[in-house]
Image 1 (cartoon, rainbow, N blue to C red):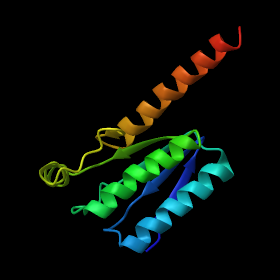
Image 2 (image 1 turned 120 degrees about the vertical axis):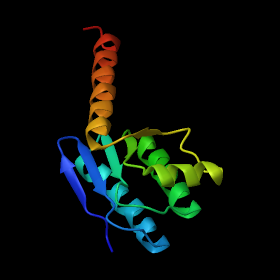
Image 3 (image 1 turned 60 degrees about the horizontal axis):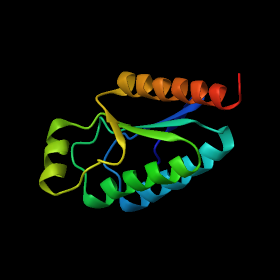
Length: 129
């Protein structure tokens, strides 16, 4: 089942509704990359609140999404990791140490806003304004 991706300003929000098959995960990667380019997105939120089990392929794929979109200029935040999913991931040695996670959608949006604000300030200083 395809993951719906909503556009909110310069952000994309992918809301995973159920456990993803490997094919669904690959499709999500492709869809996000296309939409990052199409909408020139600066931030992506992948909401996994509805997921109660995450296998190693899905975890690696989320990390891949974050790395791919970062190369395209968009920050990625994974939100809504359930406590039991986080616990299982740690037990399996699967971590998101090189990417940002947030408790929920609101916190993820706030983090992206802070990143965008910092980027605007840096760009303003760098251009001599």
